[in-house]
Image: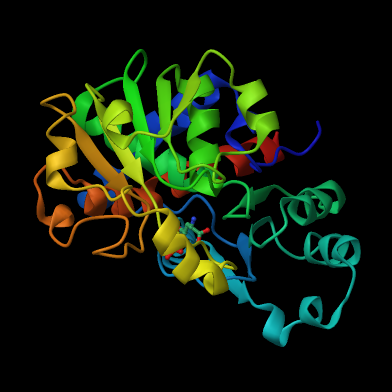
Length: 304
Ligand code: CP
Ligand code: NVA
């Protein structure tokens, strides 16, 4: 059987994604009971990071250790990847040595190329275009706090970036309506809009997007790799800050999520993360549980 990868949310069926979320909730309960569960003894996760990370690195590394396996952190600074060894060669070599690989990189096409030459499952740990692991955690958090997201309305406020495009895929896979409020010039890619027709709308008005929404989400205005655009983006995204007052326009039961790290005073008000509607710490914790469930799913598939 062909090896299964997780490069975007579209690589699993809706049923499989829901199965992973249910399993994440079970693994979380086991973890909280301090139950030892080590199905991956002797298994190794390779972790390639070409961009910074706190949550992703720690959740994958801790998750693999908790499942009885181990993880190797690889950065371009001290591997041959950073000295121009072709991606295809690196994929062929690494995938003969480890059982599963996660990659955080810039160009989504590089991740696809790596996966094409890998004998073992490859997980997207963030590219310029998608961040599907974060969506597993977000969807788990909504499910735990409010039940199924099917038929609900989600408002995305801000940049049409990797997180926004992952929410677009989630709208298709989990069956919700996504309203995106982005300033002109910062829409998601047109091909994503075409693929997500019927699930996604764009407006320039955060108030319009948030009205009656069950989940409100935002992200930084300048993503990793866009640092030099920071000042210009601060000007263009003015008016797209999520505040307590903006959330007051949403459904009374609304939740607020942010993948973190957050910039208080920019995309969120100074105090938003202290509002009871914000569930960002639960959301961050769920990275651990959701990715353990994902690795279990992919490794089981690989062993079949
Ligand atoms: N949300 C997220 O992916 O965080 P890190 O950049 O810290 O991994
Ligand atoms: N959009 C952000 C997400 C960080 C987790 C970035 O790509 O930097």
